[in-house]
Image 1 (cartoon, rainbow, N blue to C red):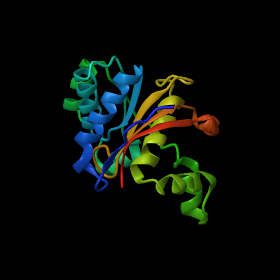
Image 2: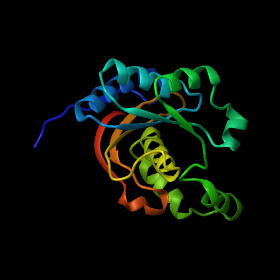
Image 3: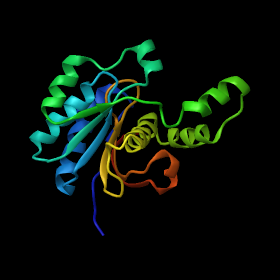
Image 4: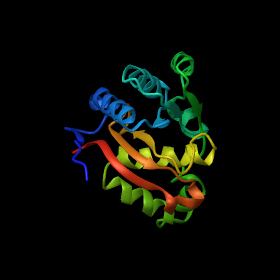
Length: 190
């Protein structure tokens, strides 16, 4: 048994992003994690994570997950200045259909009700939007083959902008969602 500290942020959102990223990087270094995945609509959070991991002495590769094309068209996508710098630090970037959206989201919009993926997403929301997002980007990265399965990884998500939640998890592909295991909560808002 171990006694570990969880970083709790006063509020969700970007205000606590630096602390969340720092706590995540330190934990990745302690556990010698090989991979980290971060929700990063502009690329900035992935870049900040890559820098923090390097500073912490971790040899962890970062996968930045940007918005799907639909959301990037509405809110803006990955910005080359962040992506290029993060890639110089070994990061890779992906975009794709959001794991808890996709066809289920279209069914909900057209016919109403709550499809299964929506129920799962709403359940994760009880722990915070960043928690749901961290799990979702891990699924997306696993689906695209850039996040190894059956190996613990760091996953970061946020509320709006930045990161406010960091998890250690064992990833799974969306089609095997129930194989995903959340091992630790490193940081989350209260």
